[in-house]
Image (cartoon, rainbow over all chains, first blue to last red; front, side, top):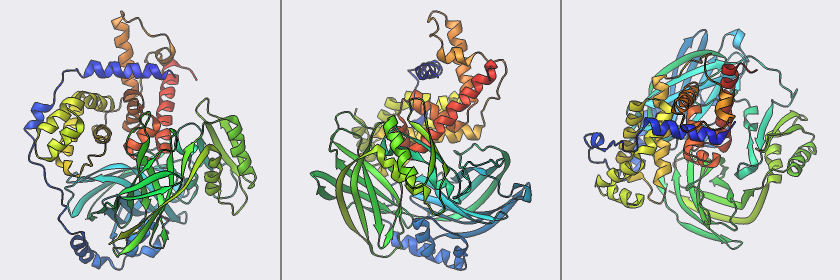
Length: 420
Length: 184
C-alpha cells in the first residue's frame, strides 16, 4: 500500500472540503460564558466523607465474588468506595448484570457478570463499550486492564476505562453505559496447554521493542476491540443508567530531584486517587536516543501495577531532557502513607535485526517455550507462542525476552513521597 | 502569538486568548474532524465543542504541556463519538474503482481534474466504509502525520493498541480493494 498516496488523498479531500479561510470564531463568541473556576478550594476529605455516607448502605457488597488483578481496584474495594448496582438486562437470552461501578478523577471501572445461553458458553467474546454522563464531565481515553473469573455458564469481569475529567465534574455522575457484545466462533488454538495463545509483534516501533498480548491469555473476556466495533454474533446494545459518586484526585507537586550515574531525574507531579496514581517524571537524556524509564511504584507495602507510560511532548531533534507520565494501578486507602517511585534504569529500544529476533527465540526456547517468529515485511517481526510447559509464566517470559531489543542505562533514581 | 501566551491570557479571563487559539488551529482541527465524521457541519460542531471544553477547563491546563496535542486529542475523541452517534458508515459497493490503481499507480495527471475528483470520491468512500475508530487511526497516522508512538501518547493508549488499530484499518482497506477489484 502506497502510504504517501494515502497522505496526498487525505490532504486533497481535507482542502477540498474545508477552506483555508473558514472561521468558527463568530459563532463561538455567542456561546462563551466566563470560565468556571477549578474546585481547588474544596477539601477532598469533605467530599470523601460525604461519599462514605452515601456508600454506607452498600456495606453488604459482595466484593469477594470477584477475583481482582488490579491493586488499584482492590484498594478502592478495600476502602468501600465502589458502588453496588445489581442491575441487569437480558437480550437474546444473554443476561448482563452490572454488579458495581467506580469513578475517580483518573479512571472509571465496572464489574459485570455475563450469563450466555448454552450455545454461546465458552465462545470468545468482543465487546464495544460507550460510557457517558449527562453533564459531559469526561471523555474516554481507552480501555485499560481487567480480569475475569467464573465457569462457562456465568462469568464475572472487571473492565477499567481511562478517562479525562473536566474541572466541572459533579459530585455524582449520572452515568449511561452502552455495551454491545460480539460472540465469535470458537477457534482452534495452536497451543494445547498452558492457558491460551500468546501472539504479538515487535522490533522497530520505539520503546520496548514491541508489544505483547500476553495478558489476554489470562482469564480476561477474550479480545477487546476499540469502542464501536464488534465482530461475530452481536448481542445488544445493553443500556444501563445509574448514578456514580465521583472521587477527585489529590494533586501533589513534590518536585524532588535525584542524580544517579550522572543523570538527573525530577519527580514533578503526582495525581493520586484511591485506584490510580499518575506520576510526571522529567530526566536528562544520556544520549540522543529514545530513552524511557523502567519505573515502579510501591504504595505503602503494595507493589503497584504499571498501566502505561507516555511522553508529555512530541520528540524534538536535539532535545537533552524529556518529560513523561507514568500511570499506576496503585491503592490509596485515604490514610497517610508513603509512596516510593523507583526508576531502576533508563531503557531504549534497538532496531529489529534477524540476529536479535533469533536471540529472542533462543531466550524463550531455553525455558521450554516454543515460538514461531516471522518477518513482518520491514516492520519488525511477529511471533506466536505455540507451546509451553505447565507452570511457566509465558507472559513474563516474553516480556523478559524482549530485553534483547533493549539497551539499558543504569540508575536507580528513587523518590519517596509522603501521601497525606 | 505563542500558544503559551494565549493560554495565560485565557486563564486570566481574556477570551482574546481563545480567539488566538481558534484562529491558529481551527482549519487543521476541522479538517481532522471532517475526515473522521465526513460531515462538514458536524465537524465544525465538534471543533467548536472542543474549543468550548478547553475554555471551560483552561484553569486545569498545565502550561508546561504543549497545547496542540492536548487539543487534537479532544477533537479526535469527540469526532469519533460524533461519528458513532451519527452512524455514518457507507455500505460497501460493488462498482467501486480500482484500489490497486489508487494506491500503487503513478499519480494522476494534475491537469486531469475529472480523474482527480473521482479518486478523491473513491478514497472518501473507502474511509466511510471504516469504523470511526479506524478512520481516526488512519487520519492521525496519514493526515496529521503522527508516528505510532505519538498517537499512543496523544490517545493515552499503549503503542500496541495503536498498532492494532492501524493494522485493522489497513486490513479493512485491503479487503475493500479485494472486494472492489475482484482480486482474491
